[in-house]
Amino acid sequence: MTDRVADIWGTRTPHGAGTPWPVRVDQYLAPATPEADVTWYQSACVLCSNGCGMDVGVRDGRIVGVRGRAADRVNRGRLGPKGLFGWQANHAGNRLTEPLIRHDGQLRPGTWDAAMDLIVERSRQVLNEQGPLGMGFYTSGQLFLEDYYTIALVVRGGIGTPHLDGNTRLCTATSDFALKETFGSDGAPGSMADFDVCDTIFAVGHNIAETHTVLWMRILDRLRGPDRPRLVVVDPRRTKVAAEADVHLPIRSGTNMALLNGIQHELIHNGWIDRGFVEAHTIGFGKLEQTTAAYPPERVAEICGVPADDVRAAARIIGAGQRVVSTCLQGVYQSHQATAAACQINNITLLRGMIGRPGCTVFQMNGQPTAQNTRETGANGDLVGMRNWQNPGHVADLARIWNLDPLQIPSWAPPTHVMQIFRYAEQGSVRFLWITATNPAVSLPELHRIRSILRQDRLFVVVTDAFLTETAQLADVVLPAAIWAEKTGTFTNHDRTVHLSEKAVEPPGQARTDMDIFIDYASRLGLTDRDGAPLVKWRMPEECFEAFRQVTDGRPCDYSGLSITSSGEAVGSSGRAPNRTHRALSGCTATIASTPRPASAKTTATIC
Ligand code: SF4
Image (cartoon, rainbow, N blue to C red):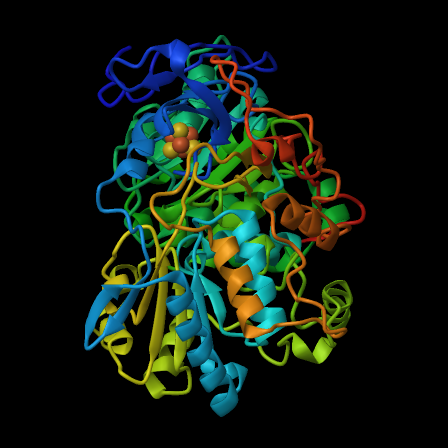
């Protein structure tokens, strides 16, 4: 095997528009591993939002390598360096293996019973003294759907606090809100297969070659193919993506809006828009035309620091494309006027009517293939199934499914964002904070302030993690978590492909899954539905997935068509039979909604 750290994208397999992306299976096994001894378990990579399908190789109860899944629609067998080698972190010597409880200022090993009893005791105390608003929960973009949904049910339905957020709020939240702003709902409209048939790619602030290496392989194979798509790249740096571009616009940082206004000015001024589509499926065009009229190429050149003719050339390519895919990531999300700029990329898509047909879409990319599930399960800014907390009908519907009084589900205010949760902790109204699989002592703004909040004596901090992070070191109780390949579950990538990830190995020591931990917490706390039955009705991930299918039935993120059967098996070359858990979920790679959702006659997109 070639050095895939040096040769990131591997060998090219060029192909033309409309022909299948050729299979290329990448595999890495630890040195001196006899392949015949390896048992393979189905999974997918969790290290970027592409979510490439892979099998996990196990020998003697340890992960020994991975291989890409040839049949997977996302990667057709390919893996990037992170996918090929990231599994080695599972074996890190500093994994947490037992609960830790703070005594006399020091974290010391304790039993699960002692740790959970203490957590429940402090929860009861805060609930009795301050009610649900004394409780805060900060979760992650790195868990599985089943973990998130259990947390969302326990926190929103059981505890009844709006103080639940995920770290996705600070990463790719713009994706969520730009999709809502334009299309009325979260959820990507596109398919990865659109890259296989498009004739134009417009990449804004998205270094695909480094952030989504397998997607870049897919694009490179088109760029080297017989009918190369044209490529327009917006990035202040000359990245590998920029080096391949027909037009590269190295704009000044923070000037996305002016450039995108300028491109729309050119599209409108030159008549390169689909007026029929705009009139039939959008609102707000007049205002957009008025706004962008103030951004001719010369003005854009002045603001953005790129030649006016390059702005014209970029607009000409986008305007001439018959199948245009647009994409953006942190160069938009973490820059000036992030959501507005992301919406302008949506607007370019709408002006050209480039949606709802093969090769035509916009991707507001995510960070991980598990991040979409934070949003869909209601573990950050929405209620589960993309239900709107401001819609009494949505709240009542959720209460019916959860068998709760609607008043139990907090809907009097928006789900609290994480910086506000920390503010409440700083002020003393939040006195219990449970942080799962994220490290705010390193990742939040104003670190000195965040760390001082976490150090407060009056704040009881629980951290669930695989490692003793900087945040865990400040906690009162630390719970060891099982991670990818150590639990069964599902997750949803940036084109809504849902992957099953099977438990391939046991977690280290006493580590448990986040789903198990929150079921245990709900049980010890005595959380029930309105009939006195346990609030959480599932024990196995398969049961949780089934519940999620039901709660999303008819919603924009509708999982109800995804099957659960007992026919799927992890087939190992050793012929060893997998255990029951491994067999329980199959039908394992599916896309929610079988076609891209167009701005159809029933859907009006908002140009803003
Ligand atoms: S492209 Fe992303 S999902 Fe695929 S192997 Fe690389 S890191 Fe993993």
